[in-house]
Structures are given as structure tokens and as C-alpha cells.
Length: 365
Image (cartoon, rainbow, N blue to C red; front, side):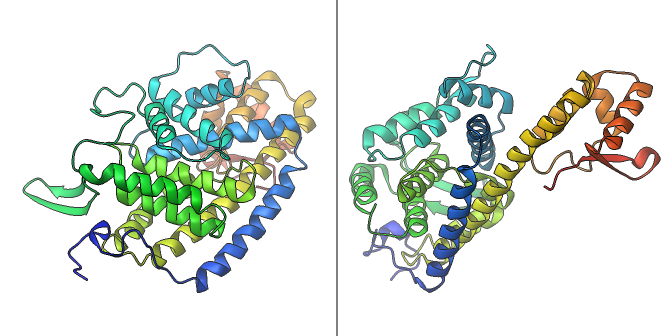
């Protein structure tokens, strides 16, 4: 085999080979964690579950875009997703980029059980490219060659060259057929990893291939469980982007993809663990406000809501008195009394002294 050829130029394309020894272990762990996660969801109040769905979809929209270097407005995305779910929200104007990714992810989530079609992929691409005037071909396969390149113009490094445009329809027809036929033939994680890999290698669109590949993986996981399922794949990938691109690069000149599938399975495990923590956080948030709502003033409530918006990790380094002043627009003396009161009521924990004083939510996560 000529190692200078890309994987799609090899005679065995697209018949991927891999060892299942480690994958089987990771698959069992993943199914165990999914079982715990599904069990936890059954005990969540309807309103909390709806809030969780919006939060995870919003997080996925933000992080899958950040992987590609695009930074979006969280509030706009949440508002767009909430509208799609039928909730009455603010009347803010939502930019096309936020509306597009929100529409894509909610559509994937709600239509997980539908067969994949070329028309459906084109619709996804139309959603994703909403408002993009710099893209020549939207809602159709690209018309030009595609290379992934880094380095200086005079000394470029070609990481990958995708399937040429004249082969795209044939390869994508084969991909769509394989996607639908493999539904009951492969373990969940293996199929999700192969789908992601297969689509990325073809790279059928001018832009948006990574975001659609990750959406396809989410669709596969939901199909495997016969229920719409949210796991924070993009959150974990975004935290370790270098590992993600290294894993992609390792296999782009061979159709033996064991290392990619093992990476993907491990990343999916981390994703389900993070999603479980996020669910626990949302449950704790509901319990927290049930406990303290009648014990705190409007300023304190506003600050606590703002802290919870930061998610599991909270304010980096903790909440400071200056943070509290910025959020509530109150006086320093009032801020000092409010914070001391929250500590006394055990809503917040306090660490440090003087200017180093920081406050943290008093919850298990």
C-alpha cells in the first residue's frame, strides 16, 4: 500500500478495519454510564428536564462552534432553542449564526429516529450556513477540491486532502446507504465513531463538516438507545482540541482505524460523565432555590442566578466582592452585608481573607 495516498485512495476504502478488544470494554462502560444517566433522568421534574435539554443543547451549540473557531452568544442560542421547544421567551433578535446552529441541533435531537437522506443533509447544511455570505455552495456538495493546510503560504503543510468533488455524490450515496444499513449491525460507540470518521474523511461540504459529523454521532447514539439522548461530545472535544485533531491525523492514510475508535470511545465516556454531572448540577440548582428563595433578597437572588449560569465550573477562582458589585450595582457596604448573610445562611462558602476573599456555591458539585 502506498503510504503517500490518502485513505480514500486506498483499494479497501471505505471498508474500515479495527480491533475490538479495547473497544468492547469501553462499550460496556459506556452503556453502564448511559444506564445510570437514563435512570437519573426518570427522577427529574418535567420543568427541570426541559431546562436541562436546553442547557445541554446550548452548550453543544457553543462548543461545537468553538472547535471550529467560531464564538457565539449563549443567551441568543438558548433563546432560539427555547423557542423551538415552544417556550415563550424574550423577543431578542437572534443572529443567523446562533439561529442556524440552534436549529440544526434541535432538529437532530428531535428527529433522531429518522433515516438519513441526502436531502436531510442538505437541509442541515442550509441551517448551519444561515447568513453566511462567504460560502459559495450552501445546501449542496462542494464544487471545489478541499485541503486542510497549516503553516506559512510559502511552506504549507497539507494535513489532509479530501475526496475530490467529482466523486462526492458516489461516495456520499454509499455513506448514506451504509449509515442506514448499519443501524442494527454495530455496537453504539463503534458505529458513532465510524460515522464521524467516515463523514469527516469525505468532507462533502465547503464548510461545516466537523459540526455535522459530531451531530451524526449524536444521532447514532440516540438511535442505539431508541430515545433522544444528549451527551456533551463537543464540550469534551473542545477542551482537548489538540488530541482530537491528532486522532484524526493518525489514520488519514490508512483504513485501519483502531486508534481513532479507541480515542472516540474514551472521549464519549468522558462526555457522558460530564453530562451526568451537568444533570446533577441542574437538579441541585432547583433544590438550592427551593431552599433559599424565601430567605434571600432580590440582589442576592440575581447574583446567585448569575453564578449558576457559569455552570459546573462556576466563576473561575470563585465569586469576589467586586463580582457581586458588578452584578447587583449596589454599594460596597450593602454587598458586604449581602455576602455575609449568604454565608451565614449556608448558601455560599467563604474562603480567603481581605482582597483574596472568594465565595462558592454550597452544593456538592
